[in-house]
Amino acid sequence: LIENNSFIDQNHTAIRIRYYSAPVIRSNEIISNGSMSYGIYLLSVRDAFEVVGNTLILNDATYGIDISASNGSADIHGLIGNNFVTIGGTSTTYGLDISGNYVDIFHNNILNTSSEATAGRAINLTGNYANLKNNIFANTGSGYAIYVSNSDDITESDYNNFYAPGGRVGYWSGNRTSLASWQSAAGFDVNSF
Image (cartoon, rainbow, N blue to C red; front, side, top):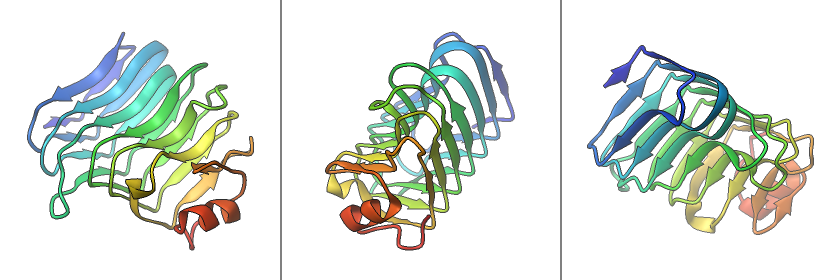
């Protein structure tokens, strides 16, 4: 359990966990006025991990919350919930980067202010079987609100808010410039806006 901590101006990574079963990262504050790579980085974690209630304010970072190669199953999901992430940068900049499997992504507020057009993403999905509900994914730079690499990356997605005034609401087998285009291509988010 990593809970109720403040991490200010860390150089590379504020929280990094590798090869751990069911870690819980809760109610932490991570603020970086300089440049850093990761706010929260979970690599090869197992079972029902939780990343909940954290606040990340990252001036120039690559990844806000990065879940890489998690080992979930249809019965055991990881949870990313109730987090607030604002992230800026000039190159690859992902608010959430999810390459793990069976992750529930609920009630998060993700703001990407990066000037990067193609690799600036509020959420980047490359894992399998993610469930997205009641999130705000915003990119006020020129990048994507949501980017999905493969059709099996998402199991469910609805009641989300997507905001991308730069014309890149989402990527699903190509750039989707409007919510209607995203809904048609993905087949999800009928109640989203």
